[in-house]
Amino acid sequence: MSTKKAKSAIQLALSNSGKMTFGLVILNQPIVRDQLEYLWSKAVMKACADGGANQLYQITEGMQDRFLPDFIAGDLDSIRPEVREFYNAKGCEITKTPDQDFTDFTKCLSLLLKKLKENEVDAIVTLGGLAGRFDQTMATVETLFHAKNMTSLPVLVIQDSSLACLLQPGQHILKVATGLEGEWCGLIPVGQSCIVTTTGLKWNLTNQLLKFGVLVSTSNTYDGSGTVTVKTDQPLLWTMGIKKDQTDELI
Image 1 (cartoon, rainbow, N blue to C red):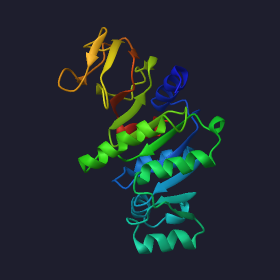
Image 2 (cartoon, rainbow, N blue to C red; image 1 turned 135 degrees about the vertical axis):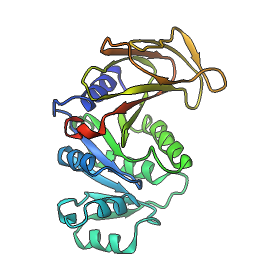
Image 3 (cartoon, one colour; image 1 turned 90 degrees about the horizontal axis):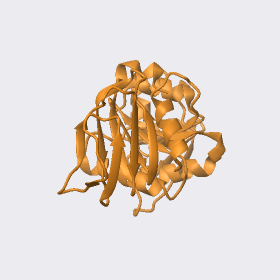
Image 4 (cartoon, rainbow, N blue to C red; image 1 turned 60 degrees about the vertical axis):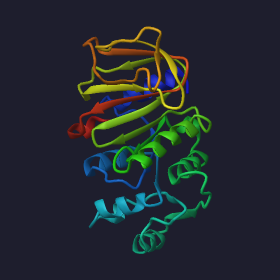
């Protein structure tokens, strides 16, 4: 993922420009209806990862015909029979991907990327994946690491009032003066240690080793400058709060 891609995707994800194009993946976790409706209206292609179809079906009760995914993919052990029957009858593509070495999110993302042309979208946005069971949250993070080998596009994960994105090695410039940011942010060295330098945070890092058991930057915040820069020598998870009550301006 290039620095330009990371910058543009995260900045646009927190702006009201409305110019961002993206593919949407829905996971099997509770989703906010307002977030779904707005993201759905802007997405170029929509997909459900297995039980994500249950979430979509439930939250769009009474108007399911308006929210038909382009496809549903996964090992199909979570999708309820009546939900599968409904979407099948509506002509939605349902693809079984039985490989148990990868999560349904990873397999659904892989299929979405094959269907999309990379120059067709700016990013992939995922709804769900950061709540509920801790092992599933970690599986979401692991998929972000798989994604870096699949595509140069950034993959943003949004759930409720949280956003997460894996920053690749290099320099990143994040605009954080849109008014849609929450108060907190964090830099998490998942998988391996990172040497990190930042500006624009209340507690900045200067060639600092981030490593579990040494230091992890959580519950950080901004210094009011409106811009955060992050330089890292290894992939680094960026996470931040977002204001879910202003979802109509989110992307």
